[in-house]
Length: 343
Image (cartoon, rainbow, N blue to C red; front, side, top):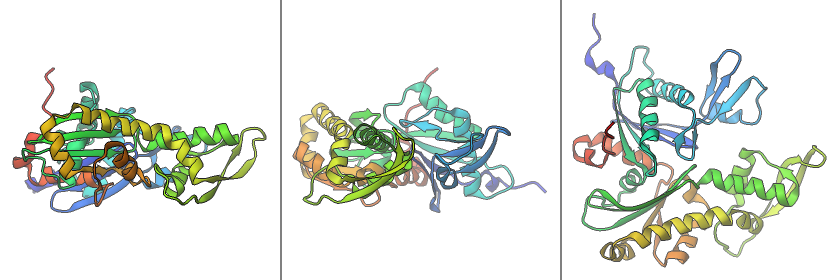
């Protein structure tokens, strides 16, 4: 007996992030939130783990098992691994043995080139998508944050992700001015690793640096100066070593990437038409993305711009929620998708 058309699968929205991939299924909401990591056995070329399980393996695997992050700076750097990761996530979401061919909306950084956009589409088609539509991340983040993107008034969003920071002023369903820089959570982690290497002769792992950033990292002094002990490898002796670091020291280490984010916001405001600038003074700037949770970043941006900064309710989920709303209201919101590039 033939399988009826529902086997094609429900439409999906995917926030294919450098750090995490989130999947939204029509009528079900967010059903998957996993790190964008794949562990592969190089002897057999088989996937050992995907997502959270694979992230636990970073820096802890034997030589023949490699934990790969197929995205860097918001773009796909390893197409084959990205396709296998997406296929694994789509199958995990649908839990069906037979073929699933959903319609997929994917969020991409606003600075991506036509080649990079085609790589994202190709990965989705290879993973089993029927049709693929792209939406720029700041637009998706603005929709997910509930900003009035279709009204003739300015809305501004700053989306600090794992690999990129997207800044955009939006009005009448389009992006009026935007800046995309390849600075995000990963760059903050690398700044901490570079600092401890230079100042303490200590080599930290990526996961340790990320944990340190989340625990005592900040972008603005708040009167408190907690300390933490970090463990790494002494570059001189090669032995494990523990050193204390203060919040002020970590804040100084993060100063350069944080300044890059502030400058991107100021550059976008400089390009903004005067009428919309007046709207933004009233509505403020919406701060979203995983990097938005860096302590004091809102106060640092507010001081630099003189404008109110509002941290959105679910900063990690706003991009996938906005993309998901496009899936739910496809006919009404399809004009916000990235137009097809002509070959």
